Every structure is written in C-alpha cells, then in structure tokens.
Length: 318
Image (cartoon, rainbow, N blue to C red; front, side):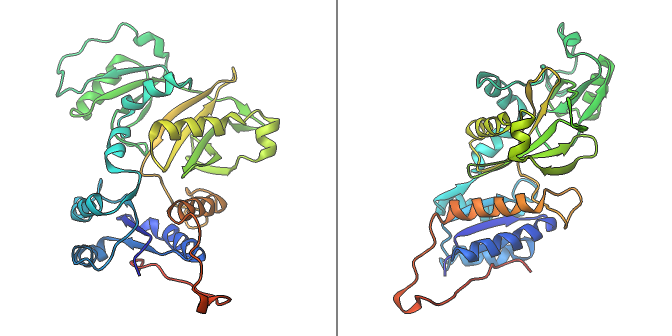
C-alpha cells in the first residue's frame, strides 16, 4: 500500500509524536511512513525502485542531516504534495526575510537593526539609531532558531562586536528587548502552534522556556487575547508553511508583538514525554490537522469491508 505521508526525521525525540501521528492517520484509514537514519538506505532504495508512491512529504531531517539529501531530491521530483516546501523553508529561516513582511501586514515587531557579518564587512561603526533599541537589547543570528546564538542582555556596541567575533560568518539582527505585561500573575508571552490552518495559541514562559496551558476561549475573551489567532493566521499567510510556531508577547500598552517570526522545524515534543514539550492536547490537534490535510476524507470501505473494522501501521518507527 502506498503511504499517504512520507516523513523524514533525524531527531529521536520526534518518535513519541510520530507514534501519535501514526495512530491518528490509522483512524482515518491513512498510512504514515516515518523514515529515520536507520531506515534511510532501505527507503531510498524502495523509492528509486518504484515500489512506493507517497502522496505527501514532510522533511524534518535534511537541514541537519545532509545524508537525507537523496531522499529529499527524490521527493522533490516525485511527490506532488509538500508540507513546508524546501525552497520556502530556506527563505523563512532568515529573520530579515520576514521582518518587513510582518510590518507590512500590520503586525507589530520589535525595533530591529540588521548587522552584516564580520566576513562580509570586517570593520563596522555603530549605527546612528542604536540608541533606539534601548538597554538591554537582544542580539540574534539572522539565520537560525531555537535560541541558538541569542544574547538577550546586550548593553552596548561592544557586545555586538564581541558577538561578531564569536560568530564571524553570521549576519546578525539587533532587537529591542521586549518585557511582557503580566496577566493574572502570568507573563503575557505565548507560543502559537500553526498546523495546516489550525491556530493553537499556548501560554509560554520566555524565562523557563516551558509551555503553560492552551489559551482557553474564556481567557481569550476576558483577557483580550482573541487577537492571538489573527496573528497566527497572518503568520501562516506570510510564512507559506503548513507546520511551524511563532512567538508573541503582549506588552503593557496592549500591543501584540511578534518576537520570533517563524520557527521551523517546529519542536514536536509533548508532555509528559518531555518537560519542555507542548500540552498533549495540542499535539493531538496538530496530528489531526496533518491527517486531515493529507487525507481530507477517509477512504470509503470496499463493499466486502462495510461494517468491518480496519487499521494500518506506520513504518520506520522502530
């Protein structure tokens, strides 16, 4: 049977979500083929041999494991439906590619200054507008995510020069430091998970980097958090991806500020498998959204099978 979704992964901590996704697919009569490093050679051989014809593809491996390149190349040529298409992913990984798009869409962002890498411009004077960032300010690599290379307590141009020396090949962005409002004793910082049109805002602590609960309808109404869904919808339109997350802070003057535009690949760990993971109910909704996107309607049973129960299993999760 041809798999409905070929999913390439190289992070073992994805496996609990892949098991959940497999179960969700099976409930719709669909199949997931999850290919990890241990399955890669066999998978590429099967695909090149014409034995399998997946209908959709999601790559969560090639950017960190180049050995997945042959599988990705085959998928580019042969699979019609791509979730998070590679060309678009490589564009949104650069924060400066998204900054002005968010502003033009009416979304608030931190005050930002782009800084070229030391390799591109060895000698650099401080920009005239540096003081507009305030103190402290953040320094981030233009390319990358997950907190890699980020400094959140920079105070002077010397901190920028030090970061340039530490990361000489990286273009940087300097950003105004955002301090959120406090709502009912919680910092008003949120991570919005976006999955195939489904917008799932969650409380998220920027200091501990731990998820809180999903934002409830009651909280959205009573605490004025309803705009979070609109921000997520706009981010999805700008990103052009089917699965990602974005970070939003609500500041004391009531503005919703996107502080981290598009996180891809999104962290799919969930509780209780990982302390840092998203709530389990959110993970289930993401799995459902992916299954519906790949298989919009469950296949009708054959006449001989009507009334019978059936299922299918994922491959490559061992």
